[in-house]
Image (cartoon, rainbow, N blue to C red; front, side, top):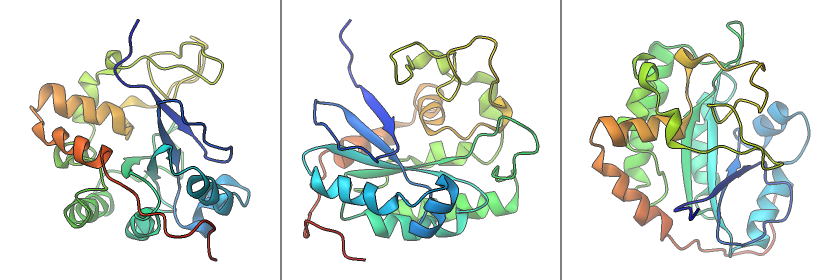
Length: 219
C-alpha cells in the first residue's frame, strides 16, 4: 500500500531521523509549564533536537488544557523560528473528572478566539483552519467523527483501536468522544463535511523555510 502522508507524533526527546515523514512534536506550553505537565525537565532538550536537525519536517502540536491555555500566544512566538508549522488541539479526557479538560463555555471560546487571531497574524505557521478551530466550541461534530479516515499505529507498529489516542486493546479505556479536542479528526470533519477549502493553506505552511539562526539555544 502506498501512503500519501505519514506523520509521527513524538515527544521530541530523541534525535530526529529524516526519512520523509512529518514529525508532530508535542509541546505543552512554555518551558516551565511544559516541564510541569511532563513531570521532568525536557523542554530544552526538545528544542535543541529541533535545532540540530533542520532537515527534519517538524510541526509543533500544542494540546490546550486548563494549565496552559493562557500561553498559546507565547508558544507560537517561541517556536516560530524553529519549526515548519504549529497546530492547536484541546485536551481530550478519559474520565469525567479530568482536571486538564477545558470545559465548553466562555473560557474555551475566548481561547479559540485568541487562536483565530493568532492564525491571522501567523498565516504561514499556524496550520489550523478557522472551521476546524470553531468545531471545538461544542460537542456536536463528534457525533459523526471521521475516525475511519486515519490508520493509527502505536510505537510497535500495532493497529490502535478506532481513536488515535486509544490503545491497541479492544477492552481498554476509551476517551470521552463528546469531549473530543483532537485536531486531526476535527480537521478531517471540516474538510469532508464543511467544504473547508482553507486546508489548501497547509501547502503554504508545508513549504515554509525555517530560518535557523543559531546552532544552540540561548537560555
